[in-house]
Length: 114
Image (cartoon, rainbow, N blue to C red; front, side, top):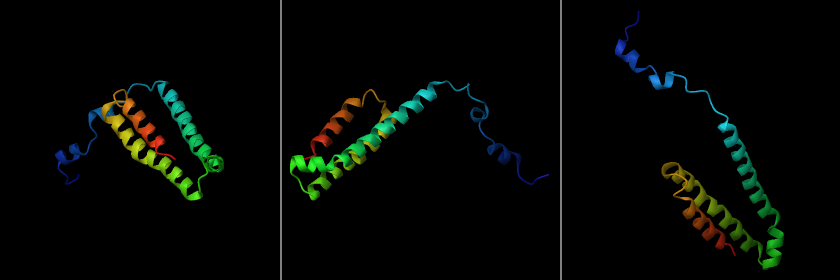
C-alpha cells in the first residue's frame, strides 16, 4: 500500500457538493448566450461607426486630427473607467440598484466629447 495517511487522502477528495451532478441545465442559457452575442455585435458596431464617421465629425465640427484623437480617447476612457468596474459592481450589488448611476456616468463621459 501507500505510506500516505488516510486523512491526507480524504482531504484531497472533492466536496460532496461538487461531486453531485446539478439539475439538468435549462434553456435560459441559450437566451443569455443570444443576448450576449447581440450586445457584442452592438458594441462592435458602436466602435466601427465612430471610426467610420471620424471624417464627417472632423469636417462638421471643424476639428483637427489631434482633436479627433481626444474624441477617440474620451470614448476609450469611458469604457475603461466606467464599464469594467461597473461590471464588477453589478456582480456584487445587483443590477437594479446600479443602473441609474451607470447611465449618469455614461452621459457624463459622452458629454466630455467635443
